[in-house]
Image (tube, rainbow, N blue to C red):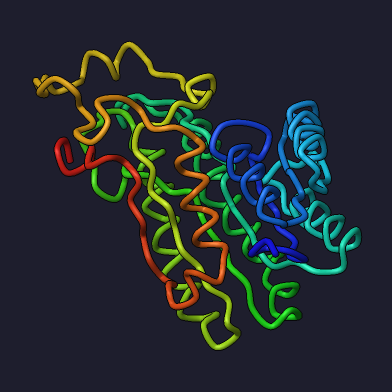
Length: 262
């Protein structure tokens, strides 16, 4: 019997990258998966892929920065399957990377609203359903940036959002422990995804970089970026009963990259 058999999972940003990898992995291990993405076509393709492998999935379009949109997506998943057990709050953007004096209020708000507010809204509206089940697992996608690495000049909004996620995770883990709801955060380093498509790195950020020469192979363990599939294995572990005593924890998955360049 699969370890997540009969469980229901929601994955935000589930149409690509880490989110899609995790959605496929959770489905492979028995979970029914609601794939939430702001791009409905990407969500639909992930759903089709899950169903081709024999799983059960639901494709939902939602903007995680909108409370009404998040609430609706979660309610649709619970209406479909009658429960909620696993929440992977993964949706996020890199946003605009530029020195603080050049960062606009709009660019700051966009990054914070999607990455941090979106995580908060996903958690907030999932909690009543998780409590109804008597427990569950919530996983945030944070980052080595804002937690171990602070040398990416121009990434102030992004790093702030990622640091905020881990603070929210720790607060929530303690608050929800009595309800047997575990809350953890994964902190990936360089992973092969399409997040670069929503990165606006300005010329000012390039000019402000502090020159640092790294040894060959900036990721000591692999000498190259990790894969969404490797991150998905960690998400599966944190979603499963195998991690039943783990909560309030940041888990780094970066091949020691952040130890080298943090």
